[in-house]
Amino acid sequence: MFETAKPQSKPSSQPSRIHQVLLSACGDDVRQAAPVTSLGMENIGKRYGETAALTTVTVNFRPGIHTILGENGSGKSTMLKILSGVVAPSDGRVVLDGQTIVASSPRDMQNRGLSTVFQEVLIAPHRSVADNIFLGYDGFFLRSLDKSRRRAAAEGLLAVLGRFPIDLDAPAGSLALAAQQLVVIARAFMRLPSILLLDEATAALDYADRDLVFDAVEDYARAGNIVIFISHRMEEVKRLSDHVTVLRSGRIIETIERDGITSQRLLDLMAPEAHIHVE
Ligand SMILES: Nc1ncnc2c1ncn2[C@@H]1O[C@H](COP(=O)(O)OP(=O)(O)OP(=O)(O)O)[C@@H](O)[C@H]1O
Image 1 (cartoon, rainbow, N blue to C red):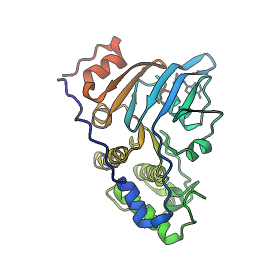
Image 2: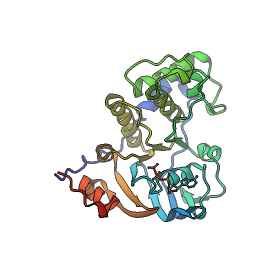
Image 3: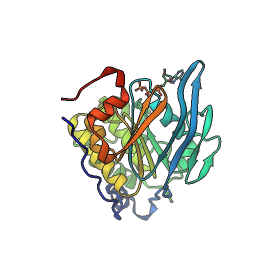
C-alpha cells in the first residue's frame, strides 16, 4: 500500500506552546533565540581515517521539519554532530542565514540558537532533574531566575512532553531511561532554540509519550523554527516530515517534499538492492 503523508500544516503566527509555557512560568525574562531562516551544509565531507562518513553533502534546512533518513552507518549522526559544532568537517562549510560558520564549537552553535538532543541520553546522574533541565543555562535568561520560577518552567515543560509527573528533586540518574530522555528533551526546549536537532531522541519513549513529544515538535516547527529530525521509524518519518533527505553511504541520494513521501519510495532510496515491497 502506498500511503502518503498528511498535508503540511500552515505556519502559525502564535508563539509555540513550549514558548507559552515558559512565558507563563518566567514572564518577560524568557529570551527566545534569534530567528533563523536557513541553515545549510555546502559540499561537506567528513573522513575518519579511511572511512568517508560524509561525501559532498549539500542540503539546506528551512523552518519546518526536515528528516534525515538512512541505514545504520549512512552518516546521519555525523551530519548532526557537524551542525552542532561537536565534530569539524574535513571539507565544505556550514552556512547560517548566509554567513559561513568558521571553527564552530557546541557553545558557539548554542549561542546562535541551536539545541541538540543526541542519540546518547546525556544527563548528570547525581544532579537533580531540575538542575539537569537548566544545565548550561547560566546567562541565558535576561535575569537569573529564582528557584520557584525555575521549578515552574521545568514542571511546565515536562507536563507538555510527558503524561506522568517527574520528581524535580530526584537525582536524574535514578529515573527510568524514558524519563531521562524526557528530561533531556525538556533541556533542549528550555533554550527556545531556532534550530532543534533530534537524533533518535524518542527511542526510549512509549507510544503515548512519543506522541506528546511529536505534538510539541510539530507545534514548535509551525511557530517558524527549524527542526532536523533523525529516525529509523517509517511511521514517524511520514507523520512529521515536511522534507526527507535520504542518505546512503555518506552521500545524499535525494530530498523528497511532503507530498511525495511514501514508505515504498523511502525504502527504494535507502536500500535499493534490498527490493523491499511495502504491502
Ligand atoms: N568517531 C568515529 N571514528 C571512526 N569512525 C566513525 C566515527 N563516527 C562515525 N564513524 C563512521 O562513520 C560512518 C557514519 O557514521 P554515523 O554514526 O554518522 O552513521 P549513522 O547513519 O548515524 O548510523 P546509526 O544509525 O547507526 O547511528 C560509519 O561508518 C561509522 O562507523
